Length: 162
Image (cartoon, rainbow, N blue to C red; front, side, top):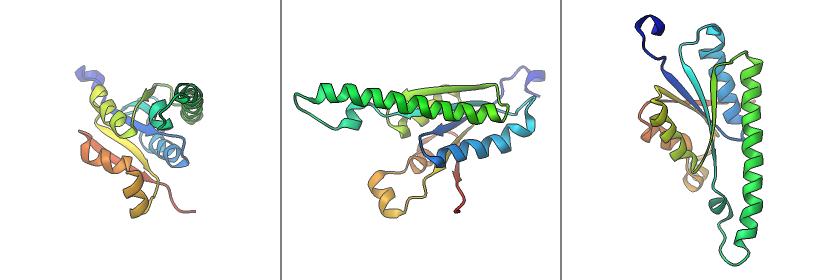
């Protein structure tokens, strides 16, 4: 339909991190929105990982901070590469070829909302970590923030309890 009218397909952004919850959300989304339409899925898929900045992850000040930040940066790059590879493997295993992967430095809440704007996304998909009220209040909830601030539909995928 999009090709006949000359319009672009709507974009679906999936936010991922190193958690099993986000990989489950990616897997679940592909199974329902992409795999059944493998030859012509209804969406363009953009998978986004927010890599924390080293200074935020370190939270340090003082003369040794620069050296510590160098090590933290290397670790964050390794984690981002591992997260991206896991996501690529999920997409490849399900024969999803037309997908864009991004690693963007910053707070996940802002990175995902900015990705929605940048790609003019129709849907943002995030996994739910299943935190209780206290943990969510202390750590903050990316899914809750996105549900209130992203300028598109936000789908929060919960992993079933085992």
